[in-house]
Image (cartoon, rainbow, N blue to C red; front, side):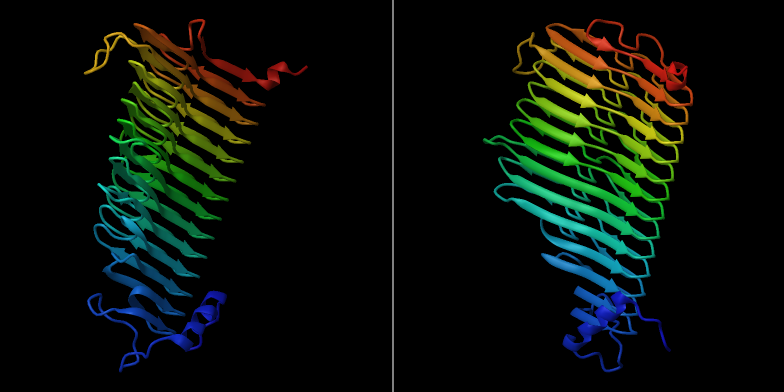
Length: 454
């Protein structure tokens, strides 16, 4: 049967010149238990543990994807799929699970500790990358379990780096779904100088005209750094030209959450959603969107950014979110929260208690091996909503939008809610003890440019 050629299909067919002989029945397809190391076909399906290529058929791998380099599948017009179990697709040290298709769907699925997860123990260093799905006109999707998609955990003076879960499509949808402690989450415990050094990048979804989305249980650029550990995590990015762009964080402590204690230091960047003409949104739970805290340590967290040219832009989170900083007993924290911007659509940020640029600084907290009175400093910047012709709004509950709470030997500062629109309405809605009622805070600002014009 004649099939229209594609550039990718034509290029892949050239691999036949160096391909191993086909099976006796002319088929390159095999069960996962009998897949070869390399398989190349034209019309037939291809299955292999390392490299599977088919010009017009499906290409797949399901042999576990646990080798240092494994599970690379490519097809011109068919689907490309890789399936790995636990500790697969670029786990520990390695690169795994790359699916590419010209006009078909591209997907990767794996279990716990997969898709670019680097979890190390003494005396090993971890370096991993995993789960890349790319399609020209089909859908691209990655799905993994907990501790996946660029998750790094290192201990005892070790170094770990990971990158995971990248989905891209020209006209189809692009999406990533991961479990807890995923999508660029990093953690480090360091008993030795310089302590643990975890670096993590995770969950990027991009589409030209389709929707782009990331869903994570806990993660999206979250970090835990203690006992001399330092590290960085960059989380969830969703971008689309004309479709919707969204990041959903179903758990707590994500989208730029940073916790630091007892000599730890860390920086995290969370959830970014951007679209040209579609809606852009981020949704998180408690301690999300650029929040965090610590003791005898330092940390920085930058949170949720939603931007659209003509669509709506929004960020929604709950308690202690969107730029909330908690500093206890010698900690220094700086956290920047929720930004929503649109050219002609509406922009909105919604946070719960202690949200949108609130700071909680407490210098009298008693911890083990910590003096009962230790200085603490916290600073936060909260919710900013901007629109050219649409409405701009921020909504916070109790002690939000630039509210500061401190006690003991502590210092806190906060910048709260700013809403501005060119021709639409601008408003901030908050509850008691909010909008920065002190000399060290700046609270709620609502600006309508139309009111300033003659």
